[in-house]
Length: 227
Length: 124
Image 1: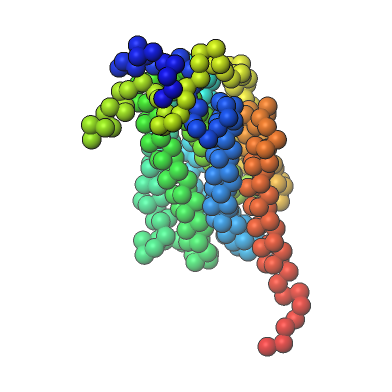
Image 2: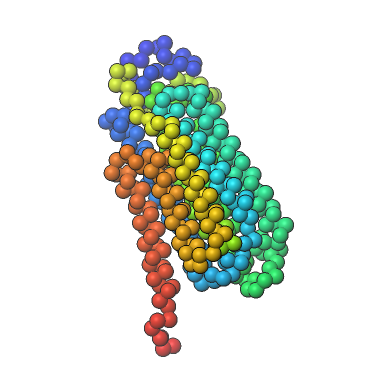
């Protein structure tokens, strides 16, 4: 802690009026750029993490195209589409949150982070309703699975892929909600005030990435062929 | 235990050895106008409506192509405006494109394998 800060700033709930720069950085711009670059590199690994599933989907879709069209129609496009809209709007709130953190609007930032987390919860709730519907309709792969059309084996394969992809995405949304709740608490305590907003910006990148993944999952799983 | 509480309620101070900038050096970052984000979201919702509507029109194989094109368009809009790729450094552009390029390698090479199997008869 450098010596220029007077003790008056160190009381509970008070903060110095400038951002902190870690030892290894020359200046605040470098510190901010490093954080963003690190997050983008992490997101590149996430692209490849989801990429394996997208690859599997692609191969099976080209191999068993017709059955994928039939199975996709069993999914509820209304719930899936609503969930897309929910995530897109949550991304808008997240973008506003990052903006508020840059403008040092503590109260606004806290509420926007809570709003983002709540929309994440709405997404997960709709997803839960959907999974329950799939379960009741005997569409969950395993001994419970029932398919009365042709080619039940590959119909089950589609649902394996559907649950793997949406499940992995749901885990990411859950992690995102947890991050937003913790950040909202820290924002309320003033941890991101006065230019210390790196964490919020980086968390925003993660949230938008999770949104992008769903943007691809929605047409690929729910809108296979025409309905 | 009490260390956590102390940290939570203390003023932000960073790690030991971090230095705080004097107030005159405080760098406020440029922020994007609110209406840019609102229009971005409206554009994304419009693209969602488009891809949803087109799914009910039979275009044959073009259903897939249009759906993917709209998804790519939405991803680009999110990356450009929400993730601030527009206006960020070339290094970040590179990092953002890198993951996508490797994903394309993965998909193109694997499809190259699957789609050409059986072209050459093998004697077993």
